[in-house]
Length: 111
Image (cartoon, rainbow, N blue to C red; front, side, top):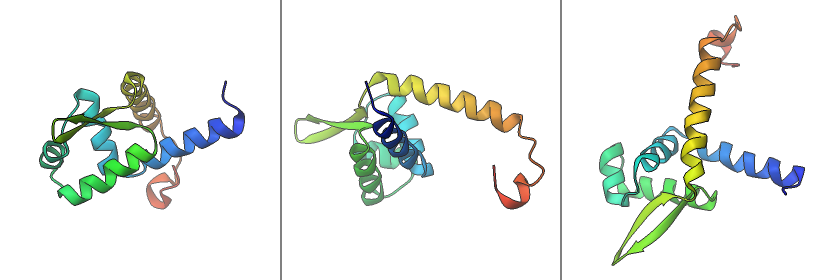
């Protein structure tokens, strides 16, 4: 069982991973199917160097793993439950966004 501090650290790492739109797009792409970095870079329209940096962040956060395939490395979600978690989180955030009532949200970006 995770201690509270460990649980907070895990959630913070997950938040860090989701803090960048490219990393979000990467996770969503890998939710669909494992892929090689060159294919992911082409699919997302980013340089291979930039993609590599984002994959390193996701790997360090424990969300993706690299699987050697011959001389190449294929990336996939570290656990299939992450795909389900992304689906659930997306649905929850979309629902909250639709119900957003904070009058200052549009001007101040507070929520």
